[in-house]
Image (cartoon, rainbow, N blue to C red; front, side, top):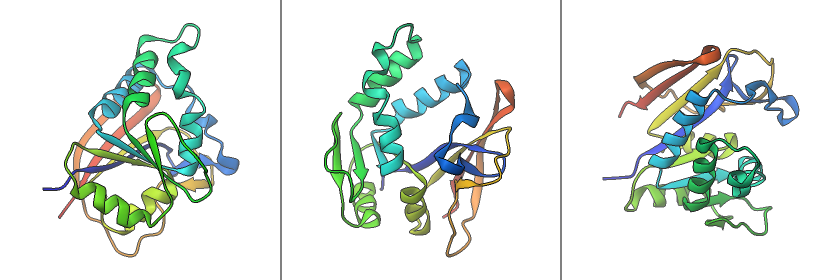
Length: 189
């Protein structure tokens, strides 16, 4: 039995996780309902795997997110959970990481496969480049696609080029305020 690897992110209707210039302003603050859904997903993970850019974005806010004036209860819980959850940061350019994270500069696919084969609960992978390598290696078991009703015309795609088709089964569809739609798929094996 292997651990489940989940790739989930917010994206635009035209398939981008960031617009040109790494701009994620299009996603705006999430509704309380969507934020709670992301919190529940994070609580279910036993470990988070980050590429460099996503790590830099997350680590710039969440270590002290619970200390922000007026932070809603869900954000306080998210920050605490984020700090407590073990993390692996895949990067050859970062020199050190903190907040219950370790740095890995070797072969990402080999390390992700090793982590999947170990004991424990589900793993999440985030960051387009890192997740793309895991997708191409056939390591991703589930996709959580949170689509926002906006077109940005270019940027960083959610899915990178694939070497072959990946057949999926629909697991869940859910609509959030503002026309945001979650669609979860499991890989057909």
